[in-house]
Length: 139
Image (tube, rainbow, N blue to C red; front, side, top):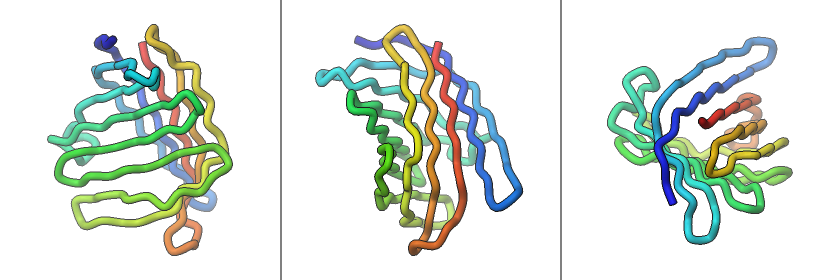
């Protein structure tokens, strides 16, 4: 099953006492996969710096979230509560391998829409980089 959606993605990136907030509004597609996982996809734009790329957010039944971007700067981030995963993040300037330690995954997205909240810390070479929050609203 799949349907067209409107999504709002707000991310907060905090380093020490300074925070940066970005918000993206986009159309996309929500799919229920064969294993009942939920996949949300949308096209990136010039505003995000990844024009020509597609982002996929896969939410599994056990609350593991995989964020995958295809295109000129491919990335795969694995977000799982109380776990640290080594992830690949592509940028226009080169690839980065970083640790993602997830503090919180709150998901109530269904085929009808809903919200996803993620809170995680990023490290590079086991050195703290930033605290991050993502708020995804789907309707």
